[in-house]
Length: 224
Ligand code: NI
Ligand code: MN
Image 1 (cartoon, rainbow, N blue to C red):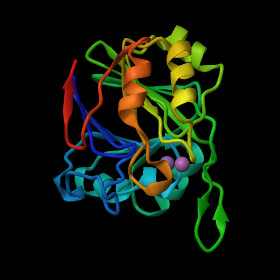
Image 2 (cartoon, helix red, strand yellow):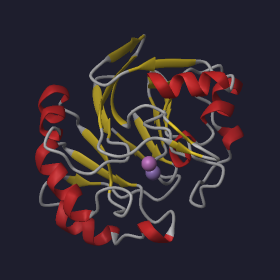
Image 3 (cartoon, rainbow, N blue to C red):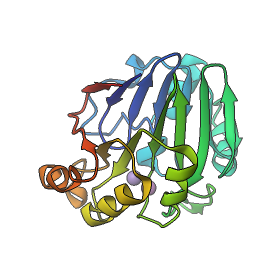
Image 4 (cartoon, helix red, strand yellow):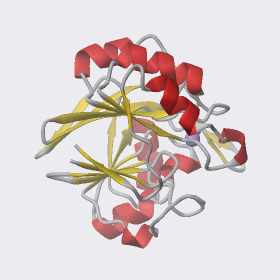
């Protein structure tokens, strides 16, 4: 499997299937691609905030790819014309060559426009493809049940937010690694905007005592 960081919380996972998670491309100052360059089979969205839904509807329509997300958000995105698969926390959606388990996240998830609209709860995902389990934590603080996610799904790779302010910062992410026990950690959700500026080298130095840390630049890939 090839894991490519597209900046912020956006990742492309390529193996038997092509999967994009939280495709925030338009308006993402770190995005190394254009939304029309994305070619995927499945789209995963962790929660309803704009920096995670991003270009999901446009990509879904163009690629004929379903958006997999929590049920309430799937109804909202369905009204915009996307093909959706609405699931819920603890459940696994099984496809040929791909399994997606939705797990808990500690965050908010309403959509704020003219009015505040409920978009269901925030979530993370464990993606299983070609024998590798990858945990994308979404936007979240550290929580004790990350230990359960580690025990139940044994993710080899954990994609963790470290930017602070909207999610956990370095201290939280270090504790998260202790609970999840992944082999490899890739940090995300930092340096996109001034409030989430983070010293990723400091994170790497400290986290390397717990796991292999792979710091990607936007557009860079890691093969596993
Ligand atoms: Ni968020
Ligand atoms: Mn976010």
